[in-house]
Image 1 (cartoon, chains in turn orange, yellow):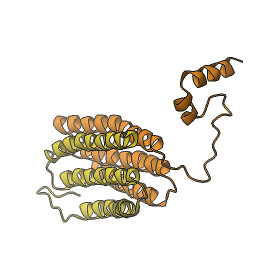
Image 2: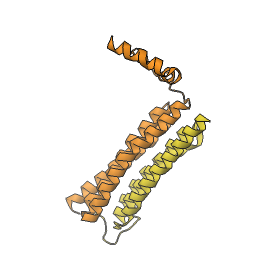
Image 3: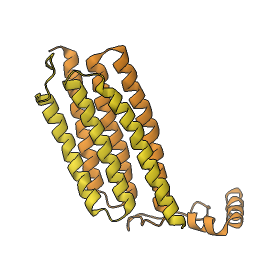
Image 4: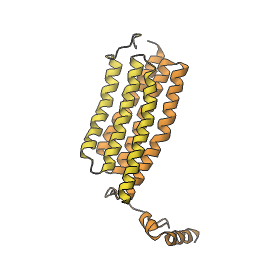
Length: 132
Length: 95
């Protein structure tokens, strides 16, 4: 019952707690995009805490290498996967939450769908808007 | 605190995995009732993440560091699966 065991147990509980928070978020959030940020951020943080707990528990070189590989892969690939799904869903027309405030256009840029439809002309007018 | 031989019935593993199982149950709800396919893909992604957490906790409590190899490889395959679903969603929209 060394002090490092308390660190391990605390990290495991923290990771499990974040995993549960991710589950709560994915049920309670009103909108695909909000659900996605809950699942990706809280879920990744939960796994990273538990893997870190493994590294503090075993404290051997191979476990620390495996833990940092997991940290690297998960931290690098989870945002990419989330971005891919969000882009595909937005393009295929998944609705935003009804209370989401749409401020596209107030920044001088054309709205995303207009830019896709009108092509180079919309891009040009957006550029002149930001210069002026 | 954690016995030398390794015991999957240890209270540390029981608590951690049941709290993670609450998250899995919540994302199963979203998997069943998700209005769009993208919601279901996100729910499956989260279930995969939480099961990785259960595996890592299992490797700690049973004192088997080689189980962490499974965590590394499963993390990579999880990403491949999600990316493949995203490409499928994209293609389905373009047709």
